[in-house]
Length: 128
Image 1 (tube, rainbow, N blue to C red):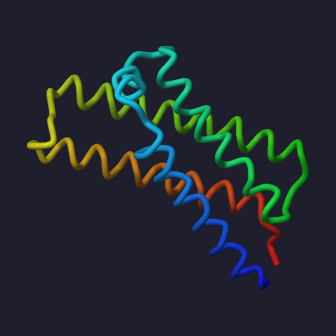
Image 2 (image 1 turned 180 degrees about the horizontal axis):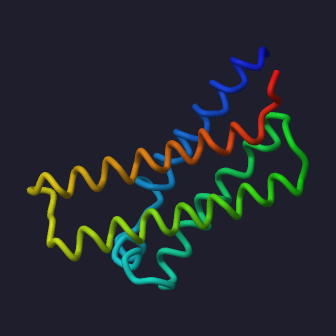
């Protein structure tokens, strides 16, 4: 597989993984707790994400174990805080799906998660 094809396959894996973790595996309890800093639901949600991200490091050769561990830790922190900030903003503003602000917040949240995956692969995959 060419490096370009490997990168496309890896980002496809991460985007599908993201949809599964964010929409299929996310319970109402997790959703409600993500806006409360340190609550178990938000921590569990971020943990689910990194567990599902981990296979990308075995499926697509790149850096070593220390880099994989650092990238997973970084994803955990970023995912947790992106979700927490979005939830806090939506709650503070009282936005619901009927409000434009809700959709802006959700869209930016999802964009930031996608950019996180680009960053992970940028650092993980070989340059050539």
